[in-house]
Image (cartoon, rainbow, N blue to C red; front, side, top):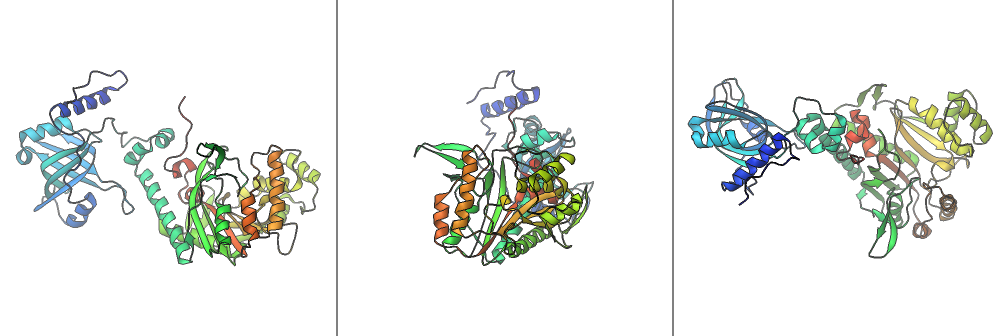
Length: 503
C-alpha cells in the first residue's frame, strides 16, 4: 500500500490535494487507475439515441458512459457533472451531463464522489437516461467508478490560453479548446482526401528511408547523426525525392509518400525544422500533368475538410475554383520592376535593382540567384490567387529537366497561394549525364562550405543510368496547406511542433 504523501514544496496547492487523494484511495484499497470500467455507450451514442426526450422525460434505459469531467457542481443531495468524450473524426468531443442523487446512489457513494472526483478526472457512470427539468439530456447515476485520477488541474476552459502554452502543452490545449481539436480533425480530413485522390489516380503509397548516407533532393541544411552499428555518419532526410525516383527506375508507374522531413534551418511562423511533405511521381507525365494533379488534390481537400472552395484571408478572398494562372518568372519580374529582365541580364544590373528596392542580397550571388531573390521578395507576396510560377532559371531546381523550348530555363513551377509557396513540381530530369553534371556542381558548392548544397549521390546516379521513364513530380507542404485552409501559423497546424526548451 502507498501511504499518503507528505507535503511536496514543488507542487501547487491543488496538485498536492490531488496527490493526497490518490494516496488515500490507494490506502483504502481503491484503484485510482483501474484497468477496466463499465462502458456501453459513448456520449455521442446517447445523444443520437435519446435526443428526442423533452424536459422531465425519464426512461428505464440503463447505460454506462465514461469520459473526462469538464464541469462539476456538488450540492447537498444532488450533484451535477459534465463528461466529455474523446474527439474523433466525426465529432470534437461530445459532452453529456451526469447526475448523482442521494436517492439513487446512497450516502456513501455520494460522499465519495464529492471527496474523490475533481475536474479533469475520468469517470464511468452507470444509470438511466433522462432529460433534466431544464431539458438537458442526462444519465441519472445508480453507480459510478473513478477511471483515472488527474494530478494536475485542467486549464480554465473559458479562459483563453496563450499561444506558448497551447503549443507546449498541446495535451491540455486539446482538452480545453475545441479549435485545437478541430485542427487535428481538419488535418486528418485533408490527409485522407489527398490519399483518396492519389489512390483514385492509381498511385502506390510507399515508404522511403529517413536515415540516409547522402542528403539530397533539396537545397537544405541536414541534421547530422551517427549510426553506431556501422560506425558511420548519417543524416535525416531533407526530401523524399531521390528514393521515390529509385522506385520509378524499378518500374513503378505512379508512387507517392507522405512523410516527415527534417531541415536544420530557421524556425518562424511559416518554417519548422520538422514538417510533413507529400511527394508524388508519375511516369509519362510532365510539369503540366503533375500540376493538374496538384490542383485536384487541393480542391478535393478543401471540399472534404472545409466544404467550400472560397477562403477568407486577411489579404483577401481566395477562390480555389477560379483560374489557376501560369506566370513565367522573367516576364512577371520584368512587369513588376518596369524593366526587362531576361536570362541574359547581367548580375550587376540585378545587384543595383536589389539595392534600390531594399532587397537583402549577397554581392557574390550570380544573376540566377538574384532573379529568384527579387522575385521572392517583390512578386511572390502579391500572388493571392493560385498561381503556378514557372520557367525558372536552372539554379532553382538541379533535379528538373531543361525547358523544351529554351535551354536557359527549366520546366519547373512553384505553386503560390495567398502569397506563400505551397508546393513545387517539375518535369523530372532523367538524363543521367546532365544529372551528374548538376550534382557535381552541387557537391563542389558543398565542398566550398555551402551547407545547403546537395551531396553527390552515386547510388542515385547509378539508378538513373539503368533508365527511367519520362516523368513529372511534385512536392506539397502539408503544413503549408493547413496554414492556407485554417489561417493559422505553422506551430498551430503541427500537433506537437519542435520548440526551444525553457531556459
